[in-house]
Image 1 (cartoon, rainbow, N blue to C red):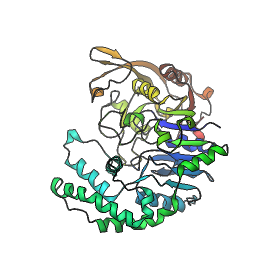
Image 2: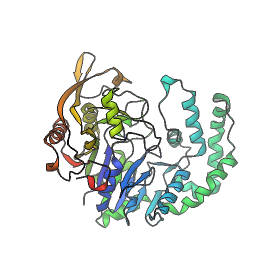
Image 3: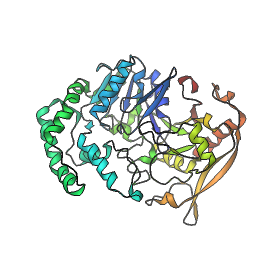
Image 4: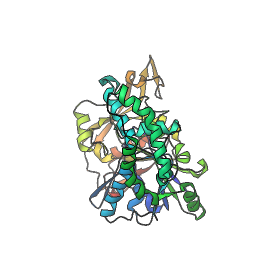
Length: 424
């Protein structure tokens, strides 16, 4: 059975969680391979809304194995809160079906403090729009080779040594740069200790777990967070996240061979949204943008921030196709476009006196492009009850067909509402 990678093709918030939840029905294991609790996947099952930040979306399917890979940065407190919330809903979140890689890096209290201090110190023009969850500083410690890994939570002596070593440098910054109180290593250890004691039971070898599923003939579903254009290398730098969000990281972020990644699904929201700072060429600051925001319920699942909305941008999608190599597209929130008399798709940019098909790569170049649009007729019909392609009105089908033509990738899945049954 083909393994599947699900990735976001825009700036995140494309509806990956819902698609993963649907695909998880046929998977033996679901792996989260990057990011932290700065991302939230919203699922609606039987009218009950559930937002997950760290635990893979497949946890709502009984019997499925859910794995948190080494490419993730894990906040122990958030993880424990999440398992408690799910357990209260009757979901099995025991270690027999939920595992954290021993190589996963851990977000510490000083990472959250550092994140908040830095963002507060920036002027309005320099703010990145970080969630303040400590994700960036944790990835920094990982690269600097001073990070705390999940396995360290089972070795209190090593954990105390690492905390003390990390705070030697960070306390200098807290005291002299940010003018705030230094953090006490002993107090940090005591804060993290009760969560460490709970998490120990969940630690394991994710690489081996994936290998076992493969040998048994089962399918592995790889779940990313955020979107391609928030990728640390390929996104709209510096308005990006701190990890690699592209498909290639599914292998390194979970501990398996790239050969295991056979079916690649690009999640494409039927329009475009973005949270936080950064350039957004097709953004709409008018009544249409307000309509998309209102109809789509566009608020961040993690922060509650209002999402900026705009027309579908085929230029950023074309780049996502180039970087990720999807075998198919999953179009989400198509129903939100109902009621608009005409729709626009940005097919190329005008930049430096030329028309370009891909985003220019200079820093902040997207803030200086002029989007070139193609106009299509809209539709007024309610499509939330559609259960197949033929149930859609002609203009909705034409819109999907045009997206296929522009990207050269077939549409394999369409979502017309938040419920599980509203995807075909």
